[in-house]
Length: 228
Image 1 (cartoon, rainbow, N blue to C red):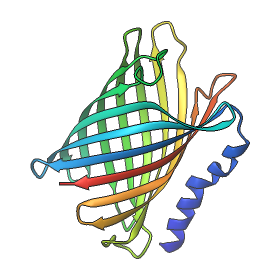
Image 2 (cartoon, one colour):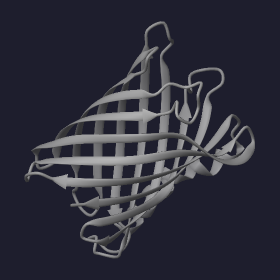
Image 3 (spheres, rainbow, N blue to C red):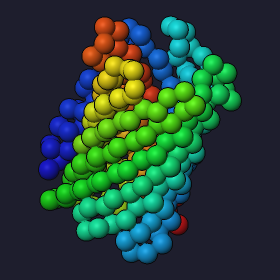
């Protein structure tokens, strides 16, 4: 089991070693705070606030805000290993870049997990409607994820864990060509107590990879998650 865990970590993070050699590279730092509130045993809410900041743009280091995202999800557990969720998000973009529009996003989600041993596998399907004043974009997403404790077979308070994912996305909009994206991420987290988790890691995105000039994007991720 120990070898399997490290094989999955290397498999997920190895492609990130080539990011520095990519052209059209943009780098972001994205801190996030989130709160989970369980209403009943099967129904819960999630609220989050995230800030996306440029740290590498136009082949130069920088630090400036790109956008602010405020989101809410309502999740219903339909079985022990399955759930559906509906979300709403508002992106404040015009406040920081006057040539860009703010965005309202609606999300529908289905998630299924499987944990045969210490490693949990997850499959998530999402549909989204990204609404701005000038355009509505429909996006379809599939994500495969794994998470597991890095010490032993069970996660205990104060011990680290790993979360990794691979996601494919398709965006379609009227009078626009379809856009295909791919995302690869890996994060290390710590459960500081029964209600608080901290995570940090990296995510690589290749946007519009079927075009002649795909965009390469690297994220530094930090987050705090509080369960009430």
